[in-house]
Amino acid sequence: MKQIVIVLMASLLLLVAGKEMRVAVLTPTPQMHCASCENKIKGNMRFEKGVVKIETNIERQEVTITYDGRKTDVKALQAGMKKIGYDTKVVSDKPVTKEKKKRR
Image (cartoon, rainbow, N blue to C red; front, side, top):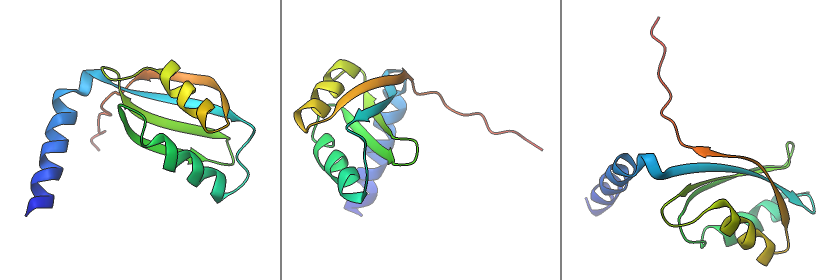
């Protein structure tokens, strides 16, 4: 029951703060080569202030971070990556948009 309440509260927070949620796509240098590289990034970046979700893609060499724009910005995320040994370039940084479902 407690977990359901937490999930509902988190969902409500995302809806209320939806206008402030952003998604940044970064390319790391040095490149990610393995699952250990991905785990290093995910394990450390999850502690950065405002980070909500982290996805990595070795093939595209991209780190996608969903974050609360009221708590942090892309420069702070880049500084967090630098702390763990990765310089980054910003591919994109834009607000989260709700996707409209197409009706058939």
